[in-house]
Amino acid sequence: MNALKIFLMLIAALFLIYPVQSEDKPKLKVGIEAPDFTLEDPYGNQYTLSYYRDKNPVVIYFYPKAGTSGCTKQACGIRDNWKKFKDNDIKVFGISVDTIEEIDKFMYEHALNFPLLADTSKSIARQYGALRDDGLAKRVTFIIDMKGIISKIIEVKDIDSHAEQVLAEVLKLKD
Image 1 (cartoon, rainbow, N blue to C red):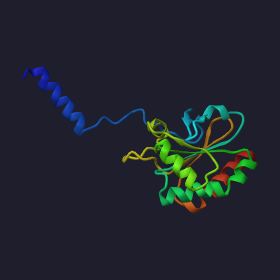
Image 2: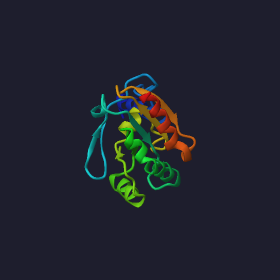
Image 3: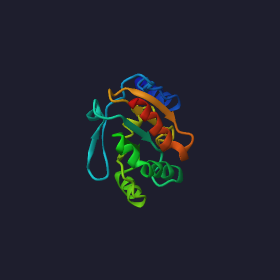
Image 4: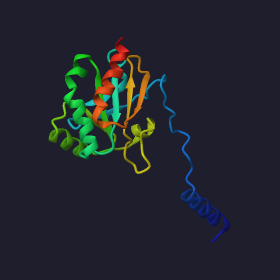
């Protein structure tokens, strides 16, 4: 084997052992513009975040896995409080890296009345810093004001009160 091939093999092996830390991992924080995206729900509807600018506050919540107990509780909390979100003209989107089929089944089984979006490429979860090391989404919520600015980031710890907490935070934007 020639020296160049050996050198390239050694470099490749080093990248496998010591992966390069991505510098494109966002440092999202309150006060900056939320990264725009377009994602699809199980019914073929596409949602683009920037469409809601100057129209509605938006809640984006990332969840790990459709159908699991924590994600079901979280989604059903939004469902059960949906009238309050709707009456206040607040848009809510749940995002996971699940397939369209998994999300469709989840929405049907729990009669979810708001859009759940599929990020199968994991690019949006990655862009928002919401991708766990195991490839699932973190349980994190972003509240975005009508100008498209992140006004609150909630690392969700209490699933039972998530919907009420998020609603209270968004209503502060309307004061």
